[in-house]
Image 1: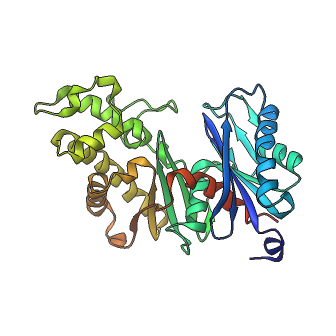
Image 2: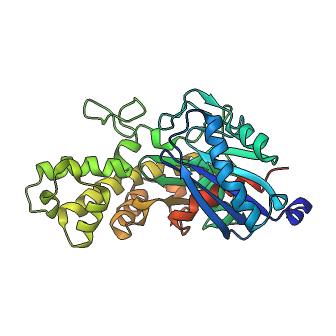
Image 3: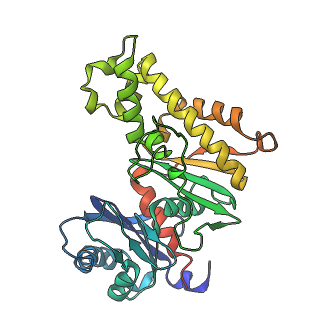
Length: 325
């Protein structure tokens, strides 16, 4: 830890979600000293939004540690560009175009601010506080409403020339007339199959055509969620288990391809779907073993993040701030 980190031993992590923004004060051990949240929506401009966040956050900082003890601020946000500190054309946020969010926070708080997309922030958080601590080569895959990813090579997140590298959720895994439409506009993306939303879509298809009895048929077909599938699988429902088999097999195929790209020490899975235990992990492992190139067999660990869902986004964002000068 450098001298500035000793004098200023805390950072702030801000997770900008489509619905809520969560922020917390974090120490070097990854302990969240205090946190709170506001609604992301309801602010006409990005400037009004930043003002609202700071109006809620500054009193929390002052009563907890004092603003003079804050080294910097890290922000995780959809479509966040690390190079420019901007959010660019995020479809699920209320402000359009390119938003210079890092500069807006810097101007208001008087401390440096770094910003990246939420999946890259999760990777930095995992490397700083989580199961990837000490690793220099790993891939983080976030399985939520979508599929996000952060690629770390030689201890650095891969951002590419424009700041947007690492969109593994939008690698095409199925082609042809039956390939699913993805929210990005393309067809056959991994996200369309292996996100929580994708699992629900798979359930709709499989339950509609199921020949054996399933408890999922008692739920209105359009209301089935990935959580419903998990609950049914735990209860022994064979159809629900087959949905996880389908999802895990496809995700394993994709991971085998990702391993060939960067030969990571580990692939770390994060999100509610990753916490489905053996129902998702067993088919993923089997599929990776079946599909990975021989020279990589048995070399890459498949891990599940042990950071609490409620804390991980804030911790991931905060980890960016330790690198600020």
